[in-house]
Length: 284
Length: 284
Image (cartoon, helix red, strand yellow):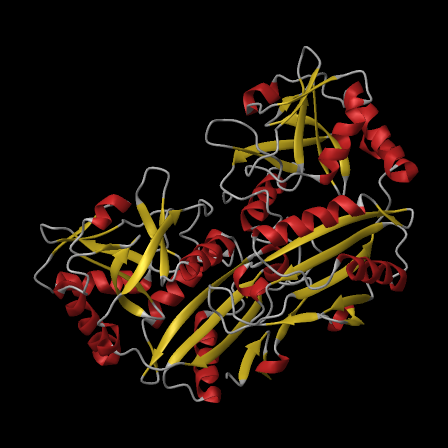
């Protein structure tokens, strides 16, 4: 259980940490956030997460609650006070508290929320079974490149997967192409051994772990191509996996009940799992 | 300034009313809400607002925080404690507080937030100038029939209107048809005197004021038709207006700078403004 959170200038016990009922994050999802993995006491890919946070703030025209140096200072203090060696750091900024009205308030101050949670460290040996996913229509808004808290469609997609005994849902656009999982980027390996993931656009979140995985894949003996692929193509893939910051690289071995390859995590996937683990353990 | 809010079983001073940082409404927009107009000490259209709240809860599979009779009791007490004769009552339910994870938590309890704000009563004489709107692409998610707090696209659309010196933004779908304003249903009167508004579907919120206005229009000497209309058709209309619960019927006299009719609120619109005012003043 996290013990100390940071909210608007103060470190407070987690049980007392909260926001006002007229906070725009709570009432209007007028807020952006990041989840950063903590491994061996270190924030993994801290700089690109902060880059993306700044980009999200810019896209929704929200003033940062503080400058980057100050933010990094508070982040370090949150980790220290909670003695987190392995887990995740959560950072959220909202457009502050004001009488409810859709337009930007004239003088609200950005709300900053930060806390950390201890979690077991990722273990490459634990993922050897892979996970099953379903496909669902992608009904999210048009700006999925902004990491906002407008996440109700993601919640409903993920829960539908859980209801069907699966780990996650791969969302599919109106043309039949996979966009991404509920909170992770989707990848496949085609029968002719091309590694594919969808190019960055407003249709998907530009995953930090996705970018790192691309770098790692480029050092591997694999032909990497950024292009969209359909749900049908995914089901005929020889390997599949998904990437995100909090659970890193997860092999996908069933899509809508169809076994991918021989139904076990493939060699390219498992090489990437291990390389990512090495990367976050110190190579990064 | 509102003085007393109700949060999770307790009446608390507004300045102290809040939710936890791991509330799913704040982190995931996993929440639904209603705004109900208070006029002459009475909740306008209370029953259909509660019907819609129950429908939204059902669609996102969230347990109500309490039964309808208890909820009405608390609503009355919030109005009484805040001595609201004219204003609005805000009711929000979230899927409770739990360690952040997209899937439904196994045992969270629904968060209930309620408060009221005093506002000047609507005045049919004050709307005689009408308002200007812009049109923007509708980039919201696919379930706009659920009154959820996933409202960031609505915020950005409304702010864009404000930036352009306009009152609101009419959102337009990929086929060129108007869906609705940022938080209000859109209506036009065609040159051959047909009153149009878009039929209810997942593309729009089924406005409570929209439904009441349809009833009132049926008592007027006007041919009412539920059908979609394009932004282009709206600009050639002879009258236009929008409806929602908090500001009721608002004449629209400019769309993207184009004057509607003679640039003043038209006779059908103003008849509806007055009939709605009579309705909420005691006829309803």
